[in-house]
Length: 344
Image (cartoon, rainbow, N blue to C red; front, side):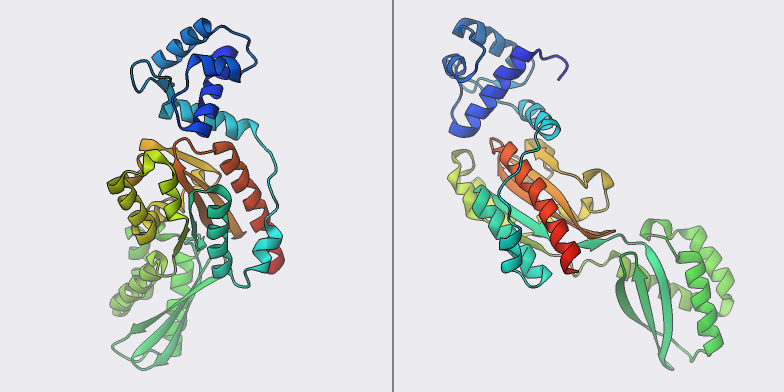
């Protein structure tokens, strides 16, 4: 950003905006009409040559105009995220009308975004911070214990644990005290060997196997993602863009969107990353999914309550209308926040 003066920056923005609209390489004559710089085509050609040397644009064919590179898109998006804060159509009333439950609301969000943006969209179910709030062991019968594990955000998981012998009420109480003393406030990564060793020492030699079984149950509950879902919509919208309509590539991309496993892995792996909580833009190779290397993916985070949050994403060509997408997502996050606060 520092290396570009105002003139180069305006020319780059004009190239990107024109390419977003047309999908065609942009020439100097187009830019001379498109901007208010009042520069000759020759001067603009010189500036475009400099921008090409800097890696912001490329010339796909001899005698053709220029198109943005990933670096050019990145600069454009970074400036957009800093400077743009426009309002878009209020979707709150539509969303409330068409969704009585959270799942149907999220499905409707995906469909609504796909219709409004003409891109593919994805919305995840909410996840929670996986920190243990407290654990309660209760004896079901002589051979089974019920472990009730409560996480931050008051998310509750139940696991049945088999035992080899009947436990007294005093033993169950002791185990509850030990578990909560050592595990309260910890997440999966923090339940390490020193913590486990101390727990076993406190529980006593006779209960080492039982403590292991209880820890296994907790680990399964903490790491389990059976409830995690990704709703998608607008997969066929990608066929509207020539650069994504190659039969083989389009088929692979549509399969990725419809099969959802790779999307789930991508989003789920980033759920606990606080640096990705705001609006994030992944351009080209910045997207780890191979079938999306010719795309841009824009994601935002919605939050139902503290520690309970999910992701919304829009997938399109690298020449997507970033301004509209970013503003739409910003507005949607505000509306969802308002809906959740008033409906939960």
